[in-house]
Length: 122
Image (cartoon, rainbow, N blue to C red; front, side, top):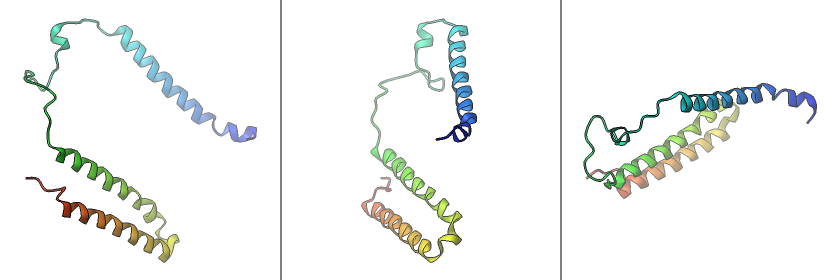
C-alpha cells in the first residue's frame, strides 16, 4: 500500500486508541479511587432484596434454551433479507427467485420444528 492509502486509516486508528485509552483510564481510576470495604454482607449474593435460599444450580427446562436458540437462529436469518431488500431492483427476477428459495428453506425448517413439538409447552 502506498502512503496515501495508509493515511486514510489514521482517523480509525486514532479513534481506536482514544476508545482504548478511555477504557484503561476508567478502569484504573475506579480501581484506585473506589472504596475497598470488604464484609460478609457485601460478599453475599443479592437478588431483588430476597434472601438467597437453596442451591443456585437448580436445573430448569431445556425448552427455555431451545426457544432462545430458535429465536436467535430465525432472527439472524431475517438479517439476510435486509441487503436483498435494498438491492431488490438490481437483482431482478434472479434475486427474487433466490429469496423465494431462501424463505422456503426457512419455512421448511419452521414446519419441521413445529412438527417435532419443539414449541409446545406442556
